[in-house]
Image (cartoon, rainbow, N blue to C red; front, side, top):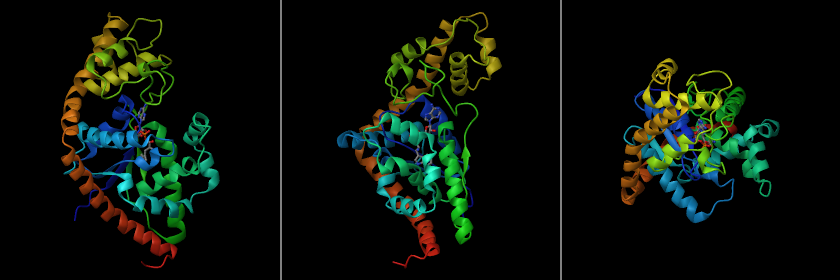
Amino acid sequence: MDRKPVIFSGIQPTGTFTLGNYMGAIKNWVKLQDDYRCVYSVVDLHSVTIRQEPKILRENTMRAYALLLACGVDPEKSVLFVQSHVPTHAEAAWLLGCYTPYGELGRMTQFKDKSAAHSENINAGLFTYPVLQIADILLYNASLVPVGEDQRQHLELSRNTAIRFNGIYGDTFVVPEPYIQKEGGKIMSLQEPAKKMSKSDATPKAYISVLDPPDTMIKKFKSAVTDSGTDVAYRPGKDGVNNLITIYGLITGKTIEETEAEFKGKGYGDFKLAVGEAVANHLKPVQDEYYRLMDDRAYLEACWKQGAEKAFAISSRTLEKARKKVGLLKR
Ligand code: TYM
């Protein structure tokens, strides 16, 4: 039997994927596929905590699925599914919600931020959002969860709930660890480099979409906010330049020192152009593959159907175990 540890991660199908999603999460999802049993999900149920246009949500879910494949998630190696296609998640979320204190949920910064941004619709789902995330992770007995820095608090909550449940009923769930890279765990906005890059930013210039045409990407990098200096050097407080050095390093594999040496004596202008070109060249094959897949709806459907079947088989076993421990009558 295959004894490799399990990885789980998810991404919301809202709008586009940013370079932050790609660097912070997806790149690692792809990298980890050979050494772990990986389970990845397009978490559409999480997205309905914010009001969505139904037609656009459907379209975005399909796009997100195709884009993950195009980025290199391999359905032969990993399980890739749409969250709402696997009903165990919602059921497990109910159970696990009964083991997650109200007070801990109220402390989640994402809940506070999202309720401030959507004050007209602070629904119960927005509050219990992290419980569904806990269900996602625990159902697969994932020991590692590759995410960006902004998910650290949700991961801590997942650990607490797993430990609490195991404490009451004996070992049931694997207690997950976050897998957050030091470089790339938090890619910053190109316009306000003290803030993380986010697809919900009102200014499209602030983020790179993985699907931006190459010349748009280059333009956005050219207008990235830096400081009044000229040296391409990684220094505390120089968030804008530091962010670009990080992105350049992640794409080219160059260390900070190598990047500094490469651009010694050149200005920010040359550097920004080089970063833009490197990112655009790197993402071009991803874009080509994405558009090819979007023309092959039958393949996509077959893929997510198979992914959902596999995910259901794994997650049902864990859910059954938890149901039994809690005292629910066998169905
Ligand atoms: P989501 O859809 O907001 O983001 C997907 C992934 O991208 C990472 N990320 C970033 N990384 C670096 N720099 C950035 N600027 C940046 N912006 C986003 C996120 O940290 C995330 O890893 N709640 C999750 C989805 C989720 C999930 C899960 C994740 C649902 N269930 C179970 C892990 C395990 C979310 O909203 O991610």
